[in-house]
Image 1 (cartoon, rainbow, N blue to C red):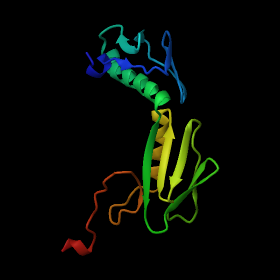
Image 2 (image 1 turned 90 degrees about the horizontal axis):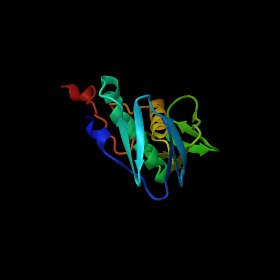
Image 3 (image 1 turned 180 degrees about the vertical axis):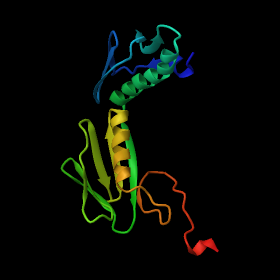
Image 4 (image 1 turned 90 degrees about the vertical axis):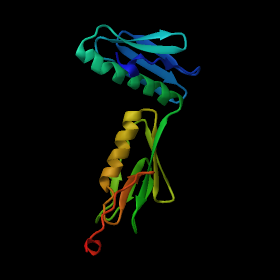
Length: 179
């Protein structure tokens, strides 16, 4: 049995969970999320905890068990606390700003790159080089941060580009260090 799938999910006091067959809706102080689980996977509410249960031991349900438990746990955490990803810009002249809801990046191209966030996510820029992506849906926050990083990933010779906060970029020596 899945070790992750067996773990119960603690539901905070401010969060309410509605289960209707395969449809799970979670409502909390930060917002509301819902998801339809695959057939054969059900969520059982027992007081202040949730348990994800599969109906049989088929291979496909065993594969989905831990995933569904993690998705429901992320929904509960998202509506109660929210998620955020931080990115850093490194490079001379590289900077970012927020224009309305859009993020505008100046990262060495002949034009500015504008990124429009999906509904339910927010972006903030601190000091022209620190970007914070936040929201209640972990999948949307992670995808938006990856989309921003993909505009100019860090290069290996000088380390210029957009990277996650705390990300370590392996550097290459270049021509001079080849001797």
